Image (cartoon, rainbow, N blue to C red):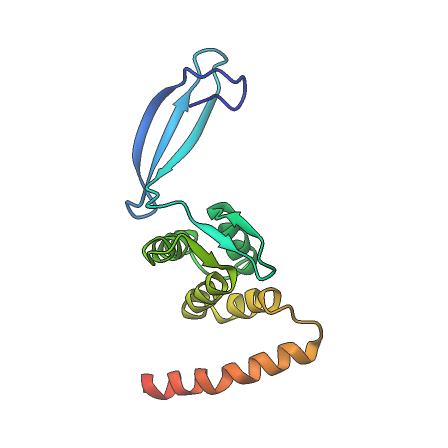
Length: 159
């Protein structure tokens, strides 16, 4: 692993442990050349995924991009970071296990919205506002009013 500080390719692993509910390995590394310390994460990747955008453009799937967008929607919400990590890992596993390498961005957005709806409705609405490209307050109002019957039905089932 290349040192991010000096570029030395001969770094040493000082500590390894499971991370993200045993889905990844966290490694603490040390660079003997500059003395720098850094952390890396290692994950299993079943296949290379390609995102097919709505305009037909294709780009490699980027887990970090998915994680950034989910974390933005979860800002200042009372959800543990570990739960968010588990959700993201679950989404990626679901995408990889679909059997297809080309996945429409619309399908990824729907899967993310489904996962967010189970964890936090505010984050779900935030993500939906960007994903569905809300233009005015009326768009929020309409979306939230469509949510209310579902929330009411879920409350009725719980009782």
